[in-house]
Image (cartoon, rainbow, N blue to C red):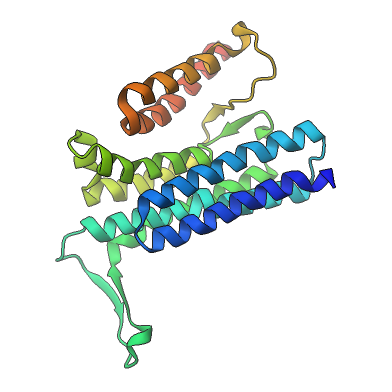
Length: 248
């Protein structure tokens, strides 16, 4: 029975992502963000449970990636799609189907399709991760949950911190489209990034992890949702610095 516990936790991740997808399709972006966070929570603990119970399996690896594809790949793309549909100017080109039966009519801005670079880039990243033996103790390219956190922070910033410069910038379609392109690239970039897995609590070996965790807590405490994009950028820059310092 215990060998199925991690997979059950992974399925809770997928369930959370599925509910988040429904919320995003209904333009309930804040609720979608909450369920993404819940899915990422389960995503963290399924691996922890597998290691604690010593029941890691190829099935669990594949199932984990499939769940992440929904929670951290598809749903962030749907969130940006909805934001683009909201903020693109009315003069933007519209793609539509013109059926006699209105049941099958569909219209959306052509530029909104850029949002699906996020799930496409996520799918490629997750498939590559499963066969890349270099990523057993660290990452190469931004992990999909980290990218999902970056994306889901946007509607929270717009809603709860509307006077901030980042909220204003986020409403610019060009910025949203640029973020989609950036996500697809950074997910698959050949940039080594450290994992937040503490094998021990030796400060000399984990100073950068301790620094990152403290910076996250202080950043969110002082700047709330505005801190999230800065945390993701800081994570990438700190990883590059650590890589250079250890290889020097």
